[in-house]
Length: 540
Image (tube, rainbow, N blue to C red; front, side, top):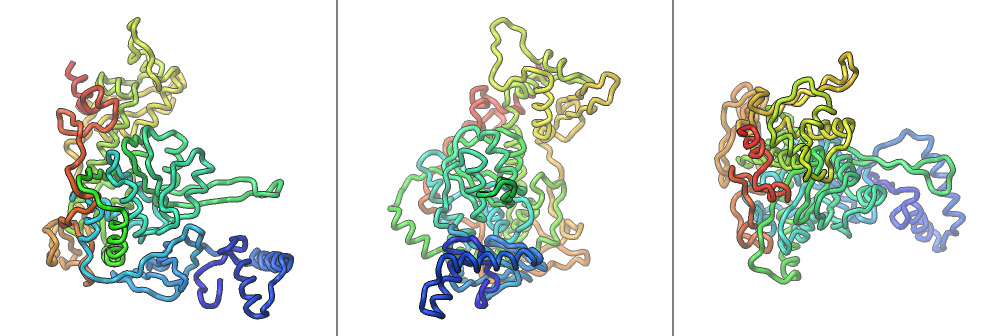
């Protein structure tokens, strides 16, 4: 670090952005001569030895938090930092935390307070119901550090400006010289792509997500790491640990595994009917970006102030994100949490199209104290013309793993699925599986109470500021409203004039008879969702 920017850490081996380059620059500035490579190497080794004797300090990438205050590195040469606390934000010259920068760390725009709340939707023209979800993803990336982050999935048909919109979103949170990355080919490639940016955007993914990449995305959402042998050593290791905000886009991205589906927030992009030159669009966005960024900071400050008071009944898997979107709903008077819950149920249904699980759902049979081998025998067709589909379990062990993986998704649809962990005289796992109408669990069409509470209360009210639509209200125990700091108009979910990505009609949808959108090819071929297949099977 330097005297002028004590909050920016210089890596000992950081190349052009590291300490060695800074030492060479300062040596020349003070002596008007160039330091030799050996002198720089020796000085770096001495400093590394001193550093090894000090207490380790955490170094943050783009966003940090300390004592309830959030600090955002703006990435500029002045070292400016955005401070969020007490429901407000401001720009300060330094911070009580350490940031590191990489070659991918870009500069955030200088926020310009103004009436920029609706301008985001001129460039990101998504459905109004999805806007709170998108805002919650952006806000969480700005104010939350040590919590899991949902993976934002942007779906649209070809030519719907998926890459352009993804680039816009990245520029609001973590600008980069390479805002979009191609999907990695192996875990090492993923670690390289993810370690250098706070927000990682994977462009143009397609088809079923491979198992290894699904696991990598899940770990990045909740906390990932990688251990490799250090270069030029025999026994030392190089450790990389990180938690990232991930954005992906594609036409037919299928999170086959339920653990990944639970971590995804999906936003569908409409078709484009009128196009503009990219140079014109980019120029308009660069003009609007400082105003939109200021409005996003207004919203982030209010959400950060409200979060300690937010309580959500029946938290989903991504509990921290649910609280953020609930706070966004309180500020914006929207219903994004209900929309997110419905998306989660739809994603869970989609993962049930694995051939064996789909057969279990279609049959709708009850099994009590049944071994995996007996389950496999009972649900495997015996016809001579039947051919084993890809993914159909071949052994009892593989069936146990398959049911264990998809049990959360089945429970989300109201099924009871449990096993005794082989605590029986035979020492084999026995399953109890009951469809929704026999399990006694709530059916997905009747979800549990989704109300948002503040300090345990559901009643009371909050005055609706001008321009906000009526929605849920919040109160404290004493009946008073928690303070919402005054500021310029925040990003709102009001209708904004559609821009390049927002013009035109929504994409063509394939619907089940119950009205649920069919997004996976297996469901489209079958002509109904997994839940309707369950009902049809139960009726037989």
